Length: 310
Image (cartoon, rainbow, N blue to C red):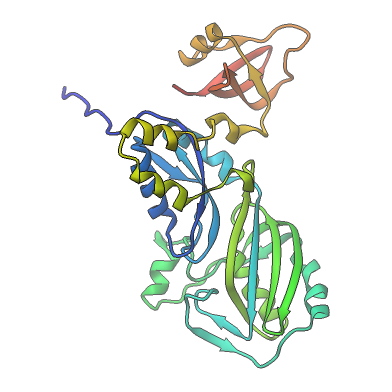
């Protein structure tokens, strides 16, 4: 049997919360961060369009195992809608598909917002990553094909009008759940008011459980390329990594000993006894000396691992 090839790169783990600039793709950003850190693997938790800026959580190494938990988290966006034109991509990148001379008053916008709070039905944009018969919707759209994308339920926890800078635009802030397309929201609001609309700017400021203060500008990281000493440069880059377990902050937490950690890493359960023993939970995470050891369940007085970390 052939010997497995050794993975290239450093076996490091953690989260880097990138402040992604405009005109920079999410996949491109992940590749850049992986290259800078010389990491074995990396991935992101929630795509940001090239024309959008802001928080792009990037998982490095074993942190990629926690990506689904961040993907499911709440998100906050600040966005500007430009009235009078609907575009094929629902943002500045597309061509004008419908237009109107009508402009909404602030009172019209405020009256409309309650319709877009709570659980709503939303049709994703034609230019989206939704799969239609095995193909991405944006690939079909680029080929000139218009497809019927089924509506789906999304959760809008909060939607507020922040400002109306002029008659042609309005600024909003939204807190929403997984799968919400802010571009589709701008499109639908414009249609409902008969004036049409599209996103002219979009910035993500929060992806649970990470905060705006965690973000690191890409320029800050790229500037470290000038540090000639490899060890010094990588140490500086590593200082921006957040411990892998921070992605699970909303789950029940169990602090364990190094001896218990060894049992979990071999796939064995550990006993949880005493007055301070945690309550049963379908999902929880265990750490030893502040490092993530395992994700598992708490049941019948035991922590039973489902996924372990190096």
